[in-house]
Structure formats: structure tokens, C-alpha cells
Amino acid sequence: MKVGYFPGCSLQGSSRDFAESLHAVAKALSIELCEVPEWNCCGASSGHMIEHLVSVALPINVLLKAQKAGLDQVMAPCASCYNRLATASHEIAHSPTTKAQVEKVLQTKIGKLPRVLNVVELLAQVADQISAKVSKKFEQTVACYYGCLLVRPAKITGFDRTEDPVEMDKLVAAVGGKSIDWNFKTECCGASFSVSKTSVVGRLGAKIMHDAVARKAEAIVVACPMCHSNLDLRRGEINQRLDTKTDIPVLFITQVIGLALGLSAKELGLGRHFVPVTFPAKPAAVAAVP
Amino acid sequence: MGAYFARPEGPTVGREKHMSSHHESSTASHSLAARLEKEGEVSVADCYQCGKCTAGCPAAEDMDVAPSQVLRLLQTEAPNHEERALKSLAIWMCIGCETCVTRCPQEVDLPRTMDFLRQEALARNVANQNADDVVAFHKAFLNSVEKAGRLFEFGMVGDYKLRTGHFFKDLGIAPTMFFKGKLGLFPHGGANKREVAEIFARARAVKKESQT
Image (cartoon, rainbow over all chains, first blue to last red; front, top):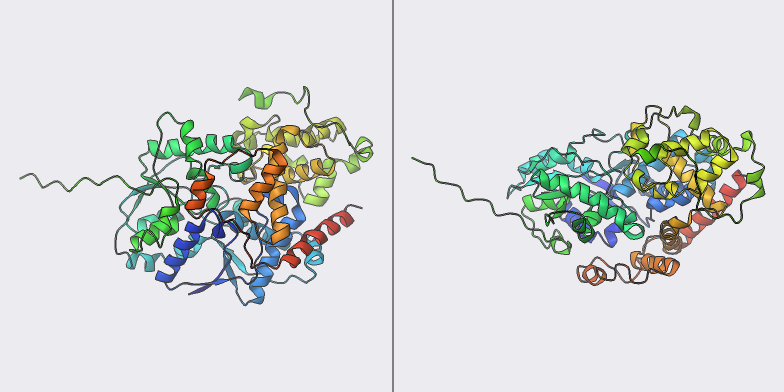
């Protein structure tokens, strides 16, 4: 299987563990990730917040490069990149005014653009293959945390159930894990306020962690660099706001699948987390009472 | 929660300087609502003030004007109400999580409205002073992308510190980030820098042209 690949800036920097685990898992599943040549930043939140036209032109430029390279679908592992690519495509398709403006900016006609996929969508397509290759069941109870931009707005992403998504939960089940039913699956983590309004990230993260821990999750599973860094790197700010501090790890879905496929902690970048990736010891099986 | 539904009045903390004469002579056809409809294809008149956006907003408690009130301030098309929306802290506290538009029974695109108001507040130089850090972050972010074609996180945080004076913030986590390989000290190559810089320049020119 061959798919276009837009890494995005985070995967080259603060989320190298996401990139490492994605590449390791793709290799194990024989998925060829074809990187979009000369890709540029999608503009992320800052783009659409303060320069709208730039925020549409940058992702469309990426998709045009992908199209030129013969890719008919592009997978963006970062939820924010995924959302910006999908939103820009949607806007070009639905607003003739914006389309004309972006054509002027990019100095080219825009035709049919490649389809945009997120990493969960891609992995869901090969769920059977993943199940068949499990060498070490992932026997943990986790909270699948989708955040905002994988699922919203529904009419743009068209991905999963908007208020109660289940695709990541299904992947966890496919590798032998259990996922909890909880309230904060799609609540916001504060995203780009990590730097500029860290207290907001602490407050929102504390609510998310509190619910997950209260419902006995042993780890949080995410598919977004911002969700990961706000719950992992910002755990100090979160714990300041919790009565009982929590040290449960935050894993990317690719790391969960990688562990089940028998890949090493190093290949999956687990050592890069702020909160160490450890799980409670499972009680030894009790001998049957005669 | 009661404060969210308070009447939109009381002192504003936005900057008074540089309010454009264009704004003072605002008429209905040049109202923010009319421009938002034309430029952003959002009709604030569709909002019937049910408050569902405010109820689900993760940032509402940090806002001086609730999300639904921001729409109400635009609906009246009164210059003093528009000014209050533009000078609000609320437009900068919106995280862009898209919860409101997803749940809105009228599908009013409130995130797009917030984007429009942020950009207008910057253009008129009336952004709320309590949002200086947020504005500095967005500017540092885009500045980094405009220069290198891709975000250079370390450089962006340095630029943010220069803009805000928060030199000591997060110094505690920086060494750990570095040793865990999460903090690159050099920008990434690979993007076509000139092409990206031209996209920024042309986008600004096209925007200007569309507004005249």
C-alpha cells in the first residue's frame, strides 16, 4: 500500500516520537509513506486566526505539490495539519471567491485536489492486517482521546462520530487493549495556548486527566502532537490543579500499535516522553480454587 | 456561569488609539456583519441566541464577552457594539476548537467570525492589551513560517520571548526537551523558502486589493 505523506512541522521537532512510531509501524505493515516533495507548513492555528488567505493558500500549495507528484491521497498524521488541509480543500470547493483569490496567490489553476486522510483513518483501513500481526497483546485499559481537530467540524472532516468517535477505540481493541467510556473524548486541550496561555492548558488538561484517571484509564491514547504535548510535556501544570497527581503516560496510537506488533521502545520513541511510559503490574493469574 | 449572560456593557480595555475614520462613519452597508457576510460568507443574522455555543465553549470562562454575545454585538450593527467586539479579550481567548459551529443549530460559523474579528482588530490596531501574549505567539509563529517555509520551534519561541519579555518562561523544561530530542536548535531545510515568502506577500496584496 502506498500513500502520500505530509509530516508537518511538529513531527520534525517536538513530536519526533510520533514520526518515529509512525514510520516503524508503516514499515511493519508494508505501507509506503511517500513524502510530499518540498512541503511547506500548513499555517496551523496561527494562520487562520490572523491571516485567512495565507491559511488557505499554504495547505493548497501542499496539496498541489502532492498532486504533481502523482499522489491521489495525502495522509497528515498531525490533527491540526489534517484539519487545515481538509478545511482549505473544503473552502476551495465551496467558495468561488476564495478559490479565485488563492489561484491568484499561487499563480495557477486549481483542479481536483488529492483526498486528505488522518492517521486513524489510514490505520483503520488495515485494521485486520494489524490484528493478524499482533505478537504481544497490548493488555492495558486506556482512554482514547480524540481532541478537536480530528473530528470537527463534521461537515469538513467527515470522520467518525462527531460527539463520540470510536475509530481509535476499535484500533486499541484490534491489538488486545480495552478502552474506557468517558466524557472528555473530544474536549479541547488548549492547543496552541501551550506557550501563550499555559494556565488555560493546565486547567483544560486537568479536567481531561481527572476524568480519565477516575475511570481507571492506565494511559491516554492520542493522534495529535498538540494533544500529546499538552497532556505529557505540560503534566506539571496539570498536576498543580489536581488533588491527586497522576503519572499515567500519554501514547500516540502508532506507539500502542507498535508495542503490540513487538517493536522496541526505542523504535517507537517512547523514551522521549516527559511522563515515563510504564504500566501497572498485572496481578499474576490466581490458581483456580479446587 | 451567570456572568456569561450579563449585558454587554462596562469599561472596555482595548486600545483607543488609531481607530480609523472609516470605522467612525460606519453605516449598515459597511457594518462588520455585512463585511463578514461578503468576505467570510457567514451570516450573523442566522443566530437566534440560543447560547449553545457558549454552553460548550472550553474557553468561555476566560472570556469577557461570551461567544453568543459576540454574535449579538455584530447583529445590531451599532458602531459601539462592533467596537466592543473588536476590543474584546474574548476573540483572542477562542482556541479554534470548532465545538460551537459543530453544535450550532443554525450552523453559524463562529470560529470564522472570530478569525475575521481578530484580523480586523489587528488591522485597526485595537487588539485587547490582555491578549498581547496571544497575538505575539501567532505573529512569531507565522513569522517563522514566512522566513523558513516550515515552523522552526526553537526560533519561534525565541521570537515570542523577544516580543513579550517572558524570557524566563519554560526555561525549566527546555533542557529536558533538548535531551529527549524534542528541541531542535537549527531550522529544517526542505521547503522552498522563496516560494513560501512569495505566497505570504501575494496573499497580503490580494487581500488588500479585494477590500478596495
